[in-house]
Image (cartoon, rainbow, N blue to C red; front, top):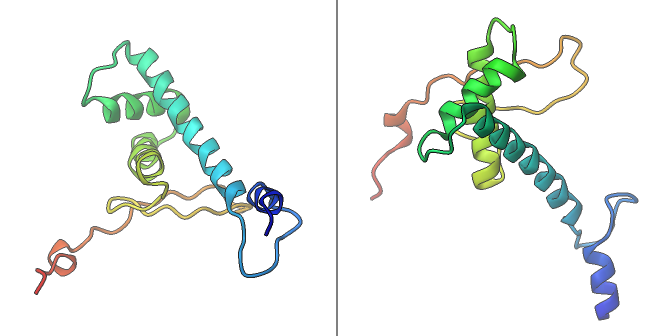
Length: 133
C-alpha cells in the first residue's frame, strides 16, 4: 500500500463495511472515546455537586450524584448507581471494557421492558485463584 492508501485505510468510516484480511478499527476507538467523555463528564458534574475533588472519594461522589440526579426516584437507585460506577464507568475509563468481578454488564437495545440491571453472582475466589505451579 502507498502511504496515501494506508492513511485512507486508517481513517476509513464504518460504512461501507471493509473487506479483506485487515480492517481499520479507528471508528470503534472513536465510539469508545465518546463513552469515556460521557463518563468523565459525569465525574466532573459529581465533583461540582460534592464541592470537593479529594483523592480517594471518586466512587462516593459519583455514586451519590448518580443516585440523586441520574436515577432519581428509582427504587433501585443505589444498585443502579453502583452498576454505573463499578460496572461501567470504572472499567471503561481504566481498561476500555465493561467487565469486572462485581457486576456483569451486557449491552443490548430494543428490549420491550427497557434496561435490565442485575448484579452478577458472587465470584468463588477460591475456585478462580488457584496458585501457579
